[in-house]
Image (cartoon, rainbow, N blue to C red; front, side):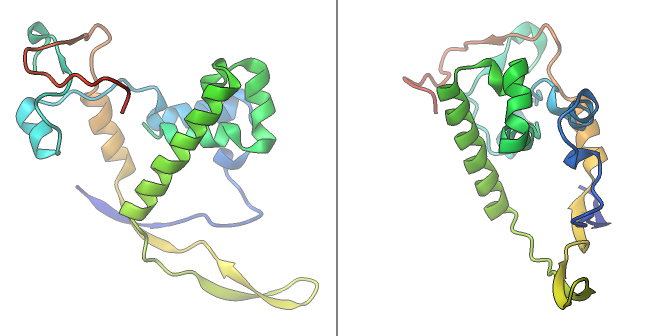
Length: 179
C-alpha cells in the first residue's frame, strides 16, 4: 500500500464540489468516488489473509473463487434530506423507518472506522482579525493518507462481474437473522 502526504482542504468558507448543495453534478462527483462499484471478488487464500472466513458466501464454482456510508449521511443531513426524499433517491426509496435504521447503521460504521483509524494529526490555531482578534483552528493540515486512486483502481479491477451470482456451498455459514 502506497501512502502520500496530503494537505486537507479544511477551509470553512472555500468549499469544493463535495460540500455543495444537492444537485445531479454533486451526486455524480460522489458516484465517481466508486459508490456504485460491485462487491470485490478475492481468491480464497486472499480472503483468509484479509480476515474473512471460508464459510461466507462465495461465487458459483464456474465463476472462480464502497464510500457508501459517507454518501448516505451526506444525503440525510437536514438541509439535503428533502432533495433526496422528494426524488426517492438512494436510501430514500425506502420507508422512513428503514431510512432511520439505515442512517443509524451508517453513523455507527463511520464511528467504528474513525476509532479504528484514529488520526493523530494536530490542528494549529491561527489569529483571525475579523470583527475582533480571535483564534481559529487551521483544519488545512497534512495527513499521511492511503493512495485513494490506487485503492479505487484495485476495487474496480477486482469487482464482481455483472453476471456473478453467489452460490451456497456445503459447509457455508447460515445465520437466522441479519448480522
